[in-house]
Image 1 (cartoon, rainbow, N blue to C red):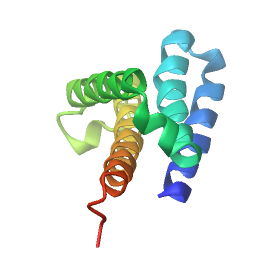
Image 2: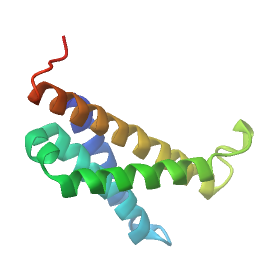
Image 3: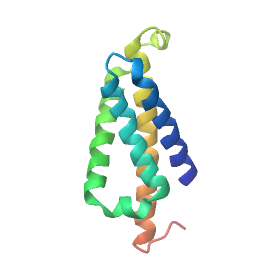
Image 4: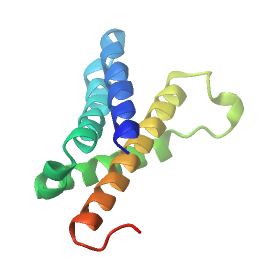
Length: 120
């Protein structure tokens, strides 16, 4: 999972950096950079991440917000996917949700192995 989370960290960081010419650049910079930070923590510091209740709580809020935004922005038909900005933003949120679910799986697996139950 380290490689998957590392990939999402790099990918979402690049997404955040290319928001410079967007009319609502600050909002989308935060939407991409916060999950990138969570993916980076899950990839490189899972012990620190899983032990911090504040970070885990912030992660849960981010996941809920991303899920809500993705559901809200899903297009009614596949033909509309590339025709407007809102649909492309919705697809970006789907990528964010995928990254956050990967982080959640990492946290779950790490906590499970730390409590002695193992994954085998």
